[in-house]
Image 1: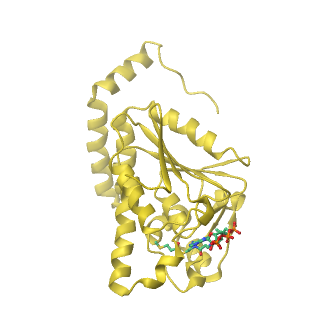
Image 2: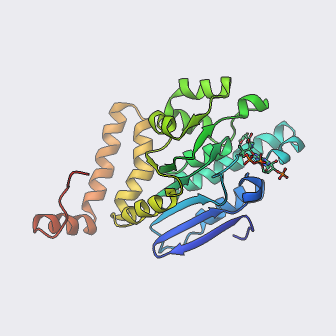
Image 3: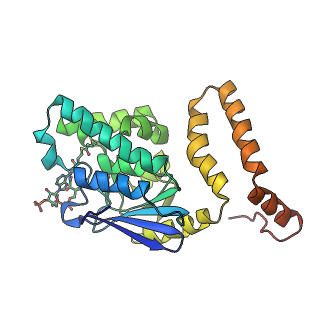
Length: 257
Ligand code: 1HE
């Protein structure tokens, strides 16, 4: 992976992936989308969790609109499929990914954030889908992932009316699982990533790869898939060690938050 607009930094077991195209509000051109794909495909084996962050005042202004007008219908479809492939590497990649959000999280920027497993937003964050007013449609997986966060009705409203959600309303609607003071989203995301990195890898794998598929299955198939992944996870030596640690008083108890 080599792209001037994306930085990968390893902080112990955490990969920090930062959009560094602040002058263009981290708008995602083809090079940046491919660099994201390659980065997630090539993460070192030592990485146990990742954080995505954006430099400058905004997380991401979405698709680089300066590239859009050059495409015909077939090229547009292949371009959308390229986004799908890249964001699929994030959602169903090797490790859980925490998005640290601030400022604009709009269009393709919201599609990128939606492919992550946890979203932490600071109080400057706002969410929008300007595709509705630009005469286009989401193409980076937004119509599949965003309704799973906020529901079809809210997404329809955002695209039909240009509605913008601020940080508080966005958290209530389901965009972010954490809302933190201005300038602290990255620190909170790192804290969560370190916590995630302590889990058994098979538990993290099940949460990333099995849970969303079970949620898409009918109940009968879901119960069956759950039994399979549950049996696999609990048969791992790491699970047996963690259970013994608890039973023998070496593991932390659950405490009130
Ligand atoms: C861009 C882009 C971009 C900024 N493509 N160049 N996304 C949008 O429709 C959002 C468009 N952007 C904005 O509404 C605003 O830029 C922001 C609210 C994100 C930020 O505002 P601000 O005042 O901080 O910055 P700015 O002055 O508007 O932008 C700074 C520069 O970035 C400026 O370029 P310059 O050469 O004049 O300095 C902007 O043109 C440039 N810039 N956003 C290209 N998006 C897979 S399908 C997904 C479909 C979509 O994502 S559609 C939604 C696209």
